[in-house]
Image 1 (tube, rainbow, N blue to C red):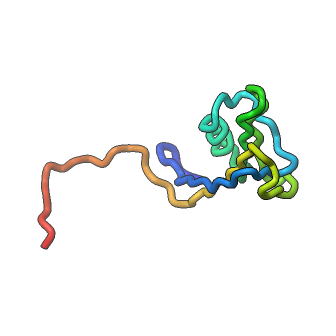
Image 2: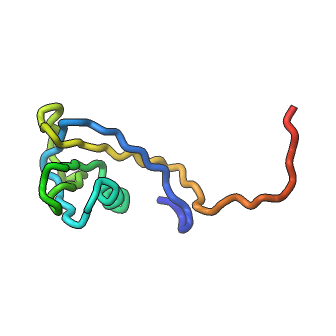
Length: 105
């Protein structure tokens, strides 16, 4: 867990036409980025299913230890995303410019 003012590095792996059984619906996510943010904020979330063909409020499904098995390649129109959380935390603050330049030979 990162300290206040720091953010963990997060990467996503995308699997088209794939879903995981037993997700929890996040009906407040209006878009994919909202859905990803919801997963990022839930430390137990290890992935999500995005279902763009569904009605608004029924597109984002979060997954974690509560979820079942993965259905690869046969869930047409659904994309599953696995979240990769890196333990390295980076500061959200900009580095301070000292005004000095150092030549590298």
